[in-house]
Length: 367
Image (cartoon, rainbow, N blue to C red):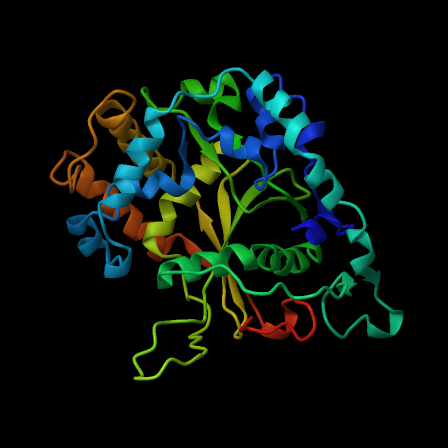
């Protein structure tokens, strides 16, 4: 991520020690790899937990929506409940105190990375649509590695490792269309104007969105950007251990279980946001960039059930039972709205070929 921050066309956030938070709006300035960003999540529903609050992964809802069995389960709803049991961070001075103790490493990490981006020769102007040539510094590969016990852990690690690459892939495409791509911190709902907050359903818990980036357009509109990187690894059924790449390519749409996350992303970016960008990125077969349009009626239903979750299972309340919203009034309408959005409110913006995804030279798939 440090190299992406040094790209001359990417608007990076400052190191945490330079942030002096006084209001909720200032929480947007903390990088997602900082301790302060994590601290801001206490007592707050993040956008990644929204689908769990809505019961999307519960067995009965998941079956109706077509959620894969590997993603189903009650654990995500219990995690969302646990988040709401922590007290919301109220004293921003604690963030300033922490910055002085732990952020010297992140400040040093910003130094020297600008050299990896070189201006492209005029003769290569039409070759590959990259704003800058990427010339990474050679570094010794670390010995050993992190032991992963499940396929899910491997896939999550892959997604985290590839996030900056996906942001850069989209940014190379979007910069050519006069968009500005910015690093995103936590976007707290309470930082929106009072007039916007007053129009929302009552009883909402503290909410925070952390999209992978924010895209701003010349007309003043803004879109959250979310990337999903699909690991090319799977469990092997052969009798002997082996390494194998299994890459079906990028997805051909936005899955229904991602829709709640995108809706809270759009909500927390305010009235200038009416759509979200979603990138499905494969390891060897390129990426698909989609746009999801926001529907006001569906947003109201999503927020109504998030508020209901907070009322029943928020701070000091018991954890949710399995299928916690199944059979509730308007719940069928919510599930149908999410399903319809994934089918009808999504457009393919572009397919980005593998050759147009900027990576380091000779980067191995197996480390």
